[in-house]
Each structure stands twice: as C-alpha cells, then as structure tokens.
Length: 458
Ligand code: GDP
Image (cartoon, rainbow, N blue to C red; front, top):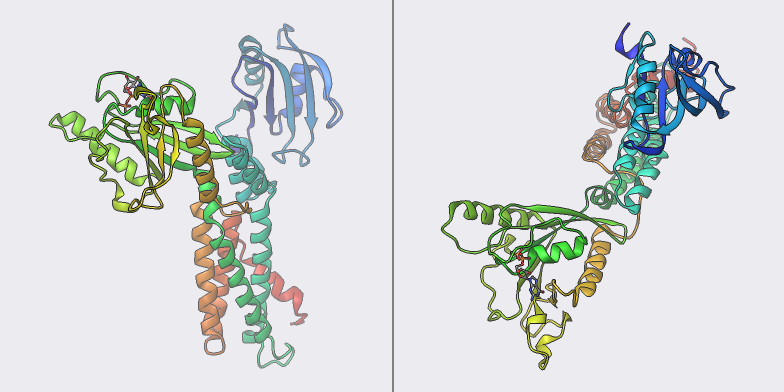
C-alpha cells in the first residue's frame, strides 16, 4: 500500500511525561484501530471513556476516545483520538498496539497537516499559519498566526483570484467571440477598471506587509562593546536566566550567544557578542570580526562601556551609521555616591550628540536603570513592528508571489487596447499566481467561468 494511503498515528500533545497525552490516528484503519484497542467505536464527536487493551488483552490505560468520521475531521480522513495518561510506558504500549495493526504506522512530521491540505481542508496559507501558530513564542505572534490560520490571506487571495478569473473571462470573451455578436460590447473597459483596482489593492497589501514579516522573525538587538564591559551580565539580567557565561576575565564570550525574549508581546532576539577590541590573538580576532558582523546586521545595537571609562568610546565601527546604536554606560555602582554621575537611567543627549542615539547609565550587576532600558526597548520594538496588526503576508513566499502578480497586472493595464491577447495572458499568469499562493493551480477555472458567465451556446 502506498505510504500516503496508510493510516498514520502520532502523539499530538507535548513531550511526555504529561498529565494527559493525545494520540491521533488518521486514515482508513482509524476505525478498526479503535475497535481493536478500545473494543468499540463511539458515536462521532462524543467523548467516551473506555479501557484500552492490547492484542493480548493486557490493559493499556483507562482513557477517553473520540471518533471523527471522514470527511468531517481535521485531516478529511477517518480520525480517532486517544486521550491517555501521558506516561512514557502508556504511550509506548499504545504505539505498540497501533503499530501491530496492518497498514498503520507512525506519522512523518507534518503529515497530518499535509493530509488536511491534500484533502482540501486547509489551503497553503492556512497550513503556513498552522506552522507559525505551533512555533509562536509571543502573544502577538500567536494572534497573527491565528488570523492567518483563519484564512484571512487565503480568503483575500481566493477573492482576488475569482476577480482575476472573471476579468480574464471578460477579456477572452472579447477576443474569442468579438466577431460573433453574442458577447456584449464594452466588456473590456470594466475588466480593465477591475484590474487596476486589484493591482492597487495588492500593492497596498504588500506595502503593509513588512510588519507582519517582522513580527514573524522578531527584532534583533545586539549587545556589543569592549571586553568586560558587562555584556553577558546585562544579557543575563535581561533574560533572567543564565544563558551566557559571566566571568571576570576579558574575552570569554568569543562566539555569539542568542536569547529570545518576549517584550510586551514583541519577539526580540538578544545577541551577546564577543568583546570588540584590537587584538593579536587570531581566535579572538575571528570572534571580534563575527561580533561586528552580527552587530551590523542587528536592528539595534546596545553599545556597552564602563561608566568609569574616559568617555571617549574606543571603536564603534558598527554598520557605519546604518544601525541605531544606543550608548549604555555600565557599572554605575562602582562610582562613589556623591556626584550626578552615579545616577542611573536614561540621559538627555548633550549638545552635539546624535538625537537618534539614546544614552543610558546602568548597573547590569545590581539592576539600576535596567527597567528603564527595558521600557525603552519595548517602546522601540513597538515602533519598529508598527502598531497595526494586519493579516496577511508573513513570508517571503507570499510577498514574492504578490509582487509578481502586481507586476503582471501592471503589464496587462499597459497592454490594454493594443494587445488584448497579451493582456489576457498576463491575467492568466496572475490568477495562476494566486492559485500558487493558495497551493492550488487550476487553469480549468478560467474556462469554467468563461462558459458559465456567457451563455455562449456553441
Ligand atoms: P562582557 O565581557 O562584556 O560580557 O562582561 P561580563 O558580563 O562578563 O562582565 C565582566 C565583569 O564585570 C564581571 O566580573 C562582572 O561581574 C562585572 N560586571 C558586570 N556588570 C557590572 C556592574 O554593573 N557593576 C559591577 N560592579 N560589575 C559588573
């Protein structure tokens, strides 16, 4: 039997041991599997408590089972769910019992979703939304994934595609039947107006998409500066866990350490880079080179330096002004308590200092001024991600397809009146692109629409 026709099972809940574990079975053998292990098939969509047993009659667990008959299931196939106690031994016994049934096997990664897609339960953008949802770390990412899963981009693409097919049907009718007198005149104008509207709508969606992609990928903040400035200490404080090695010896953080943070729902990746300084040590020099590279590629750099330094920052060779750099003076706790210099917090830029740069004084070790820094970071993240949350383009794939479609439509607009066949060709191309966005391509749709809308009768 072809693997795709086999029945698959998998643990659908988290890593054992857990209080409850959900094992899903999808395919033609899901019903027989229930009969085999639970001794019965419950009414569809009604939870039933039963004793599960293996083929020797040994008890596996006291469990809840559910039955979803095809096509009214997540995958579109017959689906059985076993809700068992989430111990490894229970799962092991259940998997063994399932595997002993002919044509039942463990699922490959993503196979349930793939079947749902193949059975028309979800489109490609929804499958991508599901993938994002599973991997969402922060609340805002989750909300975006849910919107995508609800098919907002998919719905939009379907609607665009429908309109494109309609417009190309109009144009093709104009071309094919122009001399036969049974297609109304003046079809082209409304079709072209429609194309212009569509193109503008797609372009607007594209323009608003940068923030969705950003939300998916997160904001990268690099902590950079000379060795021993307290970069790892700050990272640890921000991450509230021991992700980087803090040591009193210069040059320990030779490579790059990443920590993922949730800042007000915004995903932020903090990277701790090797100390940046002139050095002869080839290993350290490589670390410095990487650190500068990573910092230059970041969206924001926190440049850390000792508060008791002489104030002239050594080396700030990052990105040549392309990345915003905030200057953070660390270790205020080391200063005496008399002068203003000991105050932590954000400082006003002095005359002559760049306005885009922010100045802070903190103690990474003691925590002074760190809350203020975090608040500024959260506000930077808010601006950077944009406040509006729109459904839609969360991947390069979406963007590329929509760009191509918009370009095709622009070409079609230019060709109108002079080369209608070429214009029609461009429309066909863009509706196929929409199909690709949804994961399906069906050229027959164009012909269907053509014949459905114009009772041509030939
Ligand atoms: P890195 O090389 O920049 O990552 O610096 P580390 O985080 O490893 O810190 C270097 C040394 O400075 C360690 O001994 C830290 O304990 C110390 N340190 C870091 N931040 C502070 C601070 O705010 N105050 C004081 N007194 N010491 C600090």
